[in-house]
Length: 286
Image (tube, rainbow, N blue to C red; front, top):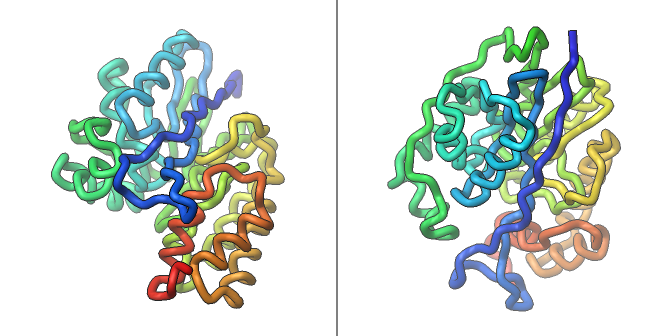
């Protein structure tokens, strides 16, 4: 069976609170554009990775309403808060939907279940914009999700830009919803890539590549770009460039400027700057 279709909603970059980290030239930081995927049949739909602020989640709800489908399940690809903190807003509109994730993802989400746990990072960067409600997450088993007789299969790929990441594979569409394993026209987040993380990330990319997808939705993407499987290789080359420059860079600024010169087309240099500071901690920024 199939009869499925998919659409992608890209939430634009979100400004971070003033007084937090800025770019070297003083420009304010923003959060990278985020992709939310709706996989749907004749009546029902599965929503993947709702965005994290109240207003952006409401925009996604309005978009879903425009399709006329009922969201029965919300799937979270990994534990980073930007891919699920808006789920309570979606559940206000679709209260019968179930939030699903793998055991590894749910374990990472557990660190952000209370409003208090969200204050040090998320509320600091986006004050008053984070939904306070907890999220009840049910573990998805090996059978995966079902949508009008079609299987949607979580594939555990290990470390990418964080631990225990997954890809949602939709065989009937040859579609891989890749979360943060693949980046499309946006600078990847490198802050958790030290200590073998980039090599593990390459292995994760290989697992996605082996699926033979005809469409790959990146968790952070330039809305002008197609969901091209070639983005797997482009993400891999970005990691290769990062490895090479890290061997020669003495400061975060050298690494940052080197990566910008190699990848000037990618959106949000701020996440690259944060990665440079994280990977070259203790080195002078200048």
